Amino acid sequence: MRIEGSTIKGMTPRVENATTGLVERTEMFIQEEDGTVTVLSFFIFVMFLMMGGIGLDTMRQEMARASLQATLDRAVLAGATASTEAGARTIVEDYFAKSGQSDYLLAQKDGDISTTLNAAKVTAGAELSLDTYLMKLAGVPTLSASGTATAEVRIPKLEAILVLDVSGSMASNSKIQNLQTAAKDFVTTVMNSSKPGDTVMSIVPFSFSVTPPQSVFDALAVEETHNYSTCLEFKENDYQHATLSSGSSSLSSGIPVNQMVYTSVYGDFDNLDSGWRSCYTDEYIRILPYSTSITDLHAKIDALQPAGNTSGNEGMNWGAALLDPTFREVTASMIAAGHLSETLANVPSDYDEPETLKAIIFMGDGANTTSYFFDRSSPKYRGKFSDLYEVRFQERVFKYAYNIYNVDWKKYGDDGKSRCSQNRWECVYDVAENSPEYSVYYLRNPDTGKFWSVAEEKWIEANTFNNFESTMDGFISRTQLDWEMAWGLMSPEYYGQTTGNWGPWNDYIGSEFVSGSMKNGLMQNVCKATKTEGVVVYSIGFEVPVNGTAENQLSACASSPAHYFRASGTDIKSAFSAIAANVKQLRLTQ
Image (cartoon, helix red, strand yellow):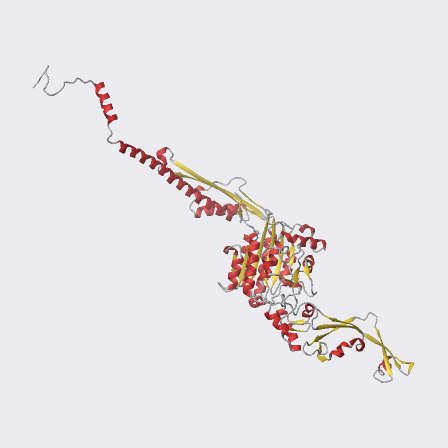
C-alpha cells in the first residue's frame, strides 16, 4: 500500500541527506565508550611485540658476534706460533673451517701477518650478516656482526731460570741423562729464537740446598762464619717475597743473611759423606747466573750430578731472586769484578718492563725431604769455643848433634842423627828454607778432658796437649776452633763415635730440622710471591706419582694447571719442547 502526504501515528517524519547522516554517525561513534580498552590493548601488544623483537634480534646478533670473536682469538693465537706467514694463514683458516664459519672469514690484507726471527704478528677479521625475526617489521631486515683480533709473539728480551732437581733420586732410571738432553734442547731452541744477547738464562741446581757462586756470595750481605761453602740459611720470612733485598735476609737493609753451617750427618774426619752434606761445594752444582752463551749453558747442564735430599723451596727461592730487579745490585758487583759482561747491567729488568718476559721452569722428580740444622735459638754447638783444636807446626831438618859436656864436639849427617837418642848428646834442628806449615787436629772429650789425636788415632792426656810448645818439634800455634769451622771438618756422627757424647748429633737431627711438609709451605709462599710479580712459572713433574705430594706441590707452584707438565723417561724432552713453544708468551694486543 502506498501512502503519500500523510504520517503514521506515533512516528515523527524525518528528512535525511547523505551529509547529515555521516555527521550524526561520527558523533555517535565518538560518544560511544564500548571497545575503548580493546583498542588500547592492541596498541600496547604491538609495542611490546616490537620491543621484544628488537631484544631477541640484538641478542642473536651479540651471540653471533661473541662466537665470531672467540674463533678469531683462538685462530690468531694459534697462527702466531707458525714459523711462516703462509703457515699462519693456513692455521687461521683451519680454525674457521672446523667451527663452520669459513664463509665469514675476511680475505687476508697486506700487513695482516708478519714473522721474523723472534717475533710474529697475526691479524684476522671476520664479518657475517644475520636475518632478523621481528625487527623486519620496523624496516630492519638484517643485522651485521664483525670482529678483528691480533695476536703478537714478541720476545725481544727473555729472562729465564731453569730450576733443576739434582737430588740423589735423579741417579735412577737414567733420569739425569734424560734431563740433560731435554734441557739442552730447550736452551738451544729458546736461544736460537731470539737475537743474540736478548735472551738471558740462569741455571739453579738444587738438592739439600743451593750453592751460589763465589761472585754472588761476595756481593751479598752475609754473616760469614767459615770458609767452606757459599750456601745461605734462609728464614721463614725470606720466602714471603721474591727478593733477597728485603725482609730478614737483606743486601740493602743492613741485616745480613746467615751462612749455612757446612757439615754432614755422616762421615769421617775431613771426609764428610757427600750424600748427606748440608751444602755442596762442587763446581758442577753451583748456580750459573745470567748467561747468554749456549755453550756455557750446555756445559753446566752436562756437568750436573745427582746427590742429596730435596729442597725445592730453596731452588724456587733462588730462582725468584735471580729475576727480581733488586738483584741488579748483585749484577753490578759481578760486572765490577769482571764476572759478567757490562751488557747485562740492566738484568734483571723491572717487573713492568713491557718488552721482557720473565719465566721460571721448575723441574722436580720427587717430594721435598728433611734438612737438618743446629739449634739457632739457643745455640750450644754454634759460635766460639768448640771441642776441636788445630795445632800448627813447621817441619824442621837436622842440623847437627853436640856433646853436652863439650859443645864444640859436633857430629853431622847420619852419624850425628844416630846420637840424638844418647844421653850425652843434644840434637839441633833448623827450619828448612821454604818449609811448609802443617796442621794436626785434636778433639777434646768434654766428659774426660782427654784429647783425641786425629792423625795418630789415640788419646793423650791434657797436660801432654798443653805442653806442645816445648815438646813438639816446629810448634807454631794452638787454636780452639769455632764450632762452624769444626763442623766443616767433622760430622756429628764422628764426634759422637769418637767421644761417646751424642749431644751434637741429637741437636743437629732433632732441634732445627725442616721437614718436607714445612718445605712445601715455604715453596708455595715464594711461588705465589714471584707469580704475583708477573713471573710465569712452568713446572715439570718428572716420574712423580700421579696425584702424589710431589705432583700436587709442583702443579700448585705453576702459574696455572696448563703450565704443569708430567713427564717420564725420554718424554721429558716433549715437556721442555712444549714449554719452549709457550714461553713466547702469546698475548692479544687488540
